[in-house]
Image 1: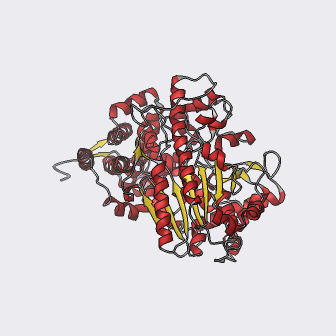
Image 2: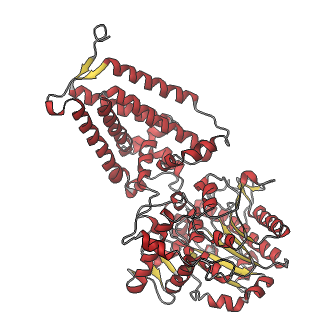
Image 3: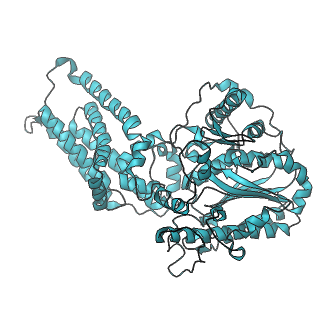
Length: 627
């Protein structure tokens, strides 16, 4: 073979030039494999040339590293093409099936991925797969006939040079990934038509760049001073059976807020979008205030995580984090405490079970039953989303089922109806929205967004009213907690809030920052529960801040204390003690029981917050909990 087909050897300059060309070609093929049209990607890249570099750079460094290992530029290119384009095709399939891109962390969930494949009708991109395999084979064939000239320096010839070259290339790839590609500020500055939708970000910024960027996300930082043995010593004294026998129903409503209470809105009494929330605040068996959630205009699952675990999304990592994606083991949670008391624990959500990996995460959080949209019958829609009214009826149905089975119920429901986008077409082209009442001068775009959003808020408030009316008639003791997951997304750069004149400035440190993260909550007990809990004394004993503000990570612990479960969990008891010092902790901002916010806590408070972070890390990484 060597005699009949001698290998043509490229010079070093031609080898480097070929590597650049091959890296660009593989990057282009990977972009072509994505669900959006290549011409739209090219248009975006031409407007933002930095994306060309950010996508081709990791591909090129990977190619060089593999070429050094395999001692062939074209063999390295073949393997690079198979890996990069193979992941790109997997990303396309996942986005089309789940509306969620491929993340590096998915590599640790291969078992779950393969088991989930059979649950979906997948249309594989046969043409893309065939082309990728054909190009891979062609590159491998070229590697047989085309090589490169050996380096002149004898010390770096052969395997020694190959290993040194591979180490240098992969080292550069790691360095570039954790610095340039991993930069959140750079990633966010590039922008996308919907920066809160990861699939859109992947489609518009390019799969190679977005995928490598994700290596620096969803991390959990080890807290300073962490000691595994010391943290294990805090896990003592768990008990069960101390709480009062009351059903607990928690409803986290999508995008629910009371922005329409601001004076800039001029609704009359008969037009009030939130009459049930306002009436319930005056109920003698109700507590109300504002819950400070971890994210602005998104991050629903992060609020779920904070409420149920008592950990804090914003403290898990210095980088932006999806808390649910850090979970891969059984964790202590509000659900698990109630389960220890013999309760039936459940989670309901009229969305897909794969989103935020909820299907697995809620099992790890101790939910005995999870019900998602695909298991709900006769779904009712308003536009593309399942209605809040349907979910109210579903909760009632499941409550009656639990009572009929002789079970006490602890349920967490996350709704979806008032999910963005708040466009005129959200509820159909002919939907007649009630008039928007405001004194602000608004653009047509903002006026439409607010009218659509306010209609969803009305339906959320109606859901609250329906549940209160239903449980008021039930003889069983029930505590209902109802709150919003985050403020609504009202346009890029908070245009809706700015035109209203509302002081909503996400991302800034200090007290003014809290307004971007506050949603209303109300905790209400029906007559039977008020009697079982001795409501007046139990509510007063919570020692809530006078304005009712509380971090989402303390809300679940407060519900455990309210229902008499102090002493059952050393973790949640600790959180309730910490809450009495600082009811709100949001990144570096602390809001004490009285007075104004401050940063840089010191002394005992600083030590307790440090313990909180260390204990959270221990639970996420090490604590073993049997199913």
